Length: 509
Image (tube, rainbow, N blue to C red; front, side, top):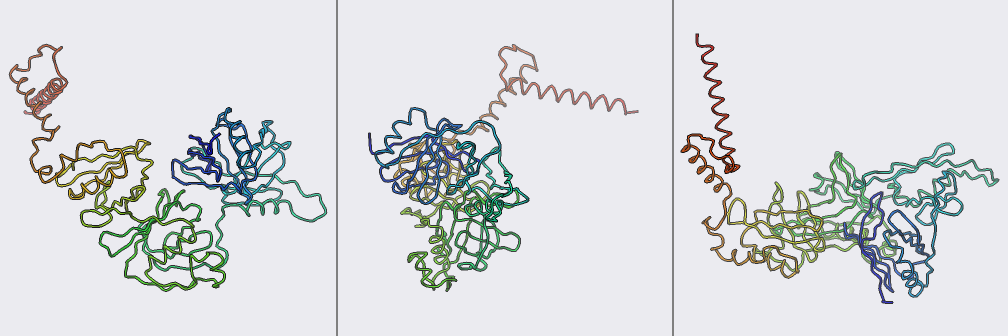
């Protein structure tokens, strides 16, 4: 048996939606990477405490429990995978992979068990269903009843809104209320945002491009609170995927981009990115609302109680420490103007495209982030309006296409070399020779195929043939679609003219 086991097309459930990815078992850890978001879940081998093998809707699944109270569930295994996974766990993790059957009796009464961040409803010691408490948005109590509400996922076709549990009255002598005890267990692990206590720090009137406006940002230990004139947003740090710090092309401003999954909502609009714009000249002196010992103990030297410097540096430093994610900055790419981005247009808006070490990001309307691993191929195309620009097209493995247009011709060589160095598949690799120098951008259209011009020429020839034959029917078997179309138009014109003449005759008395 090798040092690792890898499985593709393994699914994990996230708030009612299935996400596929790749799961790898190694001697040091268990790593799962989502194909959709690129998010990586890593479980160190020493923290693995229990493992179960179960029959589920997508074949077979594994349930992993850690010593820290976290529970992970992965589905999509085959029946034949059990023996090699069980042997690998026993050899490398010293954990027994136990088989566990689900209860299929159909009973709606049983025992509720809280294990770490999971609520399991069991009948005869066999689980009927399990609820990840991280998906709970609210918990309300009534007389002998507890209502559990869930976060909604836009990617889920059908969403579970709530589950109600009937809790029998307590007949014991300890005097505790079983309903309150049940709700307390749920809320202790639920993803419920409550602004208890003081904020760690507050940033006043920050300019936000997406969603547009100026917001006061309050930093709490577990979530971010945006307070504006019209809208409020509370963003848990668990929903933050990535952080980007990008210099503007004018070298006087900075973008700070926060990637979110799931996105924040404003009516029917979804914002997958939070984009802040800073001036490099803006300075700030900040004092955290904590003691120096508490700051040192909680953030391990990443932050200090008193900080001063450019505003964008302070904000990015605080976010990096609280979210516990690395900040992505542009790599070694430099365009024609020696900037780290390329001016272009996406859809109807102009913006900036940043080639990164592991992907591309476009800001700001709408923001787009594409990782190299999800890109199928790229294509360089001539501009549709002028030969002094070109389009850069990216096609993903899911079949989506993104076209960044109106890129200056001087940027072509730098961008082509960058894409080539990253070993991305280029559709028209021979296109570079045709683009070199001013010859490739001459105003001559001799080498270009003009579909509209060709169609006009074809219709002109057909019209001449039709006039020469005096609208004769000819051999219907040799008619082309263009010939039939022109004859139909002329027939309609004749009928219209006949109708007009008839009406004039009727009313000319």
